[in-house]
Amino acid sequence: MAKKSKERFEDAEELKADVDALREELIDLERLATTVTYQQTDHTFKNGTRGPVNDLHVEFDAGDIKVKKKGPFNNAKVRKLADGRSRVDFDKPDGDIASGKDFEVTFERDGEFAIKRWRWTRNGNTGRWHKGAP
Image (cartoon, helix red, strand yellow):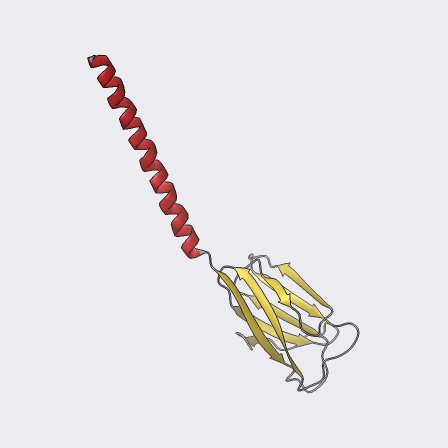
């Protein structure tokens, strides 16, 4: 009888240890769920240069950025930079965006992000970087 009681006690202790381990895993999952948040942002970019442009380059403070709405651009290529952040290169090979013209683009990510810098170019020629969101 004492042997059976000892076995049941050991089984109960083992079960308690398993429950405690599962509780810790659940706490970790809850913590993870509260830190990963979906974010979607709309940005209006205005061509404030003195002439037409056909490229827009946007760098972010985070990686894994997706383009949901690309405005008047034909292409939106998301590149991963050496430090893991994302850069989106928009291209409009079939025409220009006139000076003063504006439009909206939408970015999204599973987690928070912000625009670090952006610039206009024409046929890939260097333009001035602007800090932060437009």
